[in-house]
Amino acid sequence: MSGFVHGDDCSVDDDATVGHGDFDEPTQVGDGATIRAGSIVYGDVTIGDEFTTGHDVLVREGTTIGDDVLVGTKTVIDGQTTIGSHVSLQTNVYIPTETTIGDNVFIGPSAALTNDEYPIRTDNGLEGPTIEDGASIGANATLLPGVTIGENAFVAAGSVVTEDVPPGTLAVGTPATIQALPEPLDGPNQIA
Image 1 (cartoon, one colour):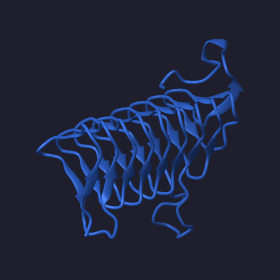
Image 2 (cartoon, rainbow, N blue to C red; image 1 turned 45 degrees about the horizontal axis):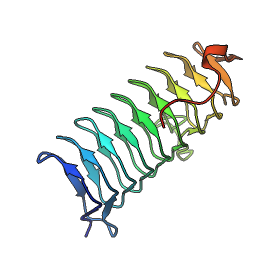
Image 3 (cartoon, rainbow, N blue to C red; image 1 turned 120 degrees about the vertical axis):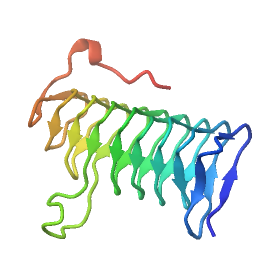
């Protein structure tokens, strides 16, 4: 079945596909969406108002996305994922299945989230990261399966996060160590 149901003032480029595949539920997109060329949004996806993509974005089935979300060029959301409102996913971000992202979250360019502890070696199930409200993830950071990034925490660029990051702290390095959040980074993101 699939298909595409949208609100008012939506713009979908001719070379974009919305409602891809054969799913019981159509893709639902709220008001004011802009979906750019090369993007593919599968069926069984629910998206709020003011959704914007760059070019060549992939959003797989079973994904729920809130209001005012930016998904940058060549970003992949591999499905079965929940993304809150006022979220900015920059260029080339990878979001695996079973990931939860809260509200007012920033994820920098080329950040990679993972969900498989021992890829293709064992079958332990998939568990994506949880990123709580107000957290920021720097460019090229890697989050390992099952980690939680606490509310208003900050992951520095290039860091590899192997353990939970408490709320309001800074994770930096490889593997990341936890430090106090510097004063200029204290407080919520300014996305909304």
